[in-house]
Image (cartoon, rainbow, N blue to C red):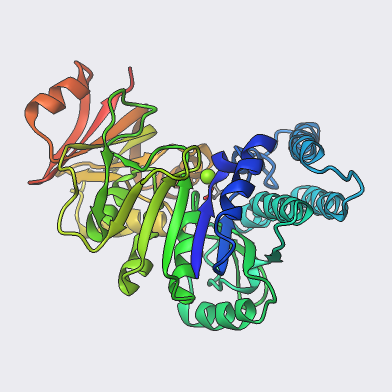
Amino acid sequence: MKVFKFGGASVNSAEAIRNVAEIVRQYLETPLVVVISAMGKTTNLLEKVVPGVPASDNDRRKLLQQNTDYHLTIADSLFADKGDPTFGRLRELFGQLDEVSARKATNYNFDYDQTVSFGELISTTLISGYLNSVGISNVWVDVRDVIRTNENYREGIVDFDTTRRQANSQLSTLNSQLVITQGFIAGTAAGTTTTLGREGSDYSASILSYCLDADNMTIWKDVPGFLNADPKFFANTIKINKIPFNEAIELAYYGASVIHPKTVKPIQNKGIQLNIKSFLDPSADGSVIGPFDSIEPLTPLYIFKNNQILISIQPKDFSFIAEENLQTIFAVLAELNIRVNLMQNSALSFSLCLDYNEILLDKIRERLESQFRLVYNTGLQLITIRYYNQQIIDEIVDGRTILLQQRSRTTTQLLVDSK
Ligand code: ASP
Ligand code: MG
């Protein structure tokens, strides 16, 4: 059995979805589980209609209409039969999404998951229906009945035992070799929807690969493989052909956008190789993450994260930044499920680099401002370089102000002003 993952960019138009169908068609002789993300930028849009977020009901409706139009335009172009039952299913999902997003805000993380999960429910419904309509017969599976998490909304913690049991009982009894299911979303014991964190569809595919003992897993991307830098930021990228499991974990942890940080561990545990291939050139080699000793070719690797905020936290009572203060700060970060990209402390101040998120920033301030003074810089870029040297650093920084820097033997991280 193989597991494929198609991300938002690979299903962002009718043409892209036709291409996915052509790729899947090449692999119909073996059992295949296909994990799909929300189409294009749908998750970003849905984040704006989470209860409590839209400025007005009018804004909310406009965004939802935009979402409906986007999907229906693509469906119209894909389906020869405009009476295909998929249209009814899609309308049902748009209706449910409208109802969920109009609810009164409760807990932001909970509301978030109930709302943004529709991106994947809609994309898989549309694509599964389309594949069936062109003779690629498949079964649509609701992954919320398969991947079990706890109630840690926006970043559900996976219960692998239950997931393995459910995956084997649900997926092995199907009378189809081809399963279409959702990335990113999961379900609790009570049947409530959760998500696995932004870009979590890779992780979904890896969880299913692990639980089903897949022969291998493939992530289909709009790049030729695992590049030494994101081509959006860097002109002359080099494809890395082989990446050891541990190197891939480190890179993803630092923010290499090619895979989600949690993706590698489960498949590494079972020695399942992960291919990264281009959906634009499906027969090309791509990259392989596997049991290798070092990356090949060995070359500097760059990871860029934009829209960073540096928060400096100073105790108001002029106490030092000591264990008790750090404990208070970390309790707040843990409560809000916030991931720290870089941190550093001095005697009087503790500095944190985070992905900028206005709502979470307000919540941090609410909780800390009675005890601490918070100062921040926004619009920053975090650069991580593995296998660095000084010349490379100078080129990349290019005269910008460095607000924070850390170095280890193999890795340096620099927080700089954006240009
Ligand atoms: N649709 C989700 C996101 O955009 C999950 C994913 O794409 O992997 O974050
Ligand atoms: Mg995505």
